[in-house]
Length: 135
Image (cartoon, rainbow, N blue to C red):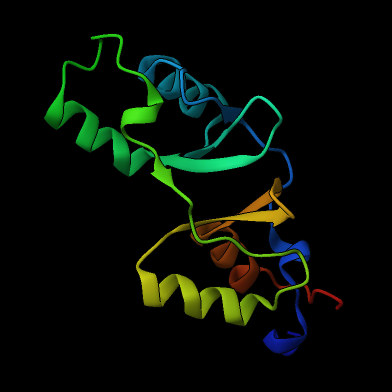
């Protein structure tokens, strides 16, 4: 396996993104996660700039604090200004950051536009892969 310092986020991130807007109903956001078998969705404004993130863990909070079908919008529960990475960051630095902050999803941005996401599942896939990833 390559030296982890030489592997960049661009190699591990998922670029097939699913996003919602702050005014999306939480049940519609839940459907996005379930329909796409993903554990988070990015929240973007009308220009596509990253505002925040909504993860499956947030849905525990949604159920605990509200009527899940009460036409509540994503804006109430999203994590605003999430910690982000760039495609050129080393995966080891991002992994350390995720551990330090206790997070499982890091949007990858180019400026303020999301271009991907890296999650704990991406790290597990990398570690379990018998193939090496070229830098």
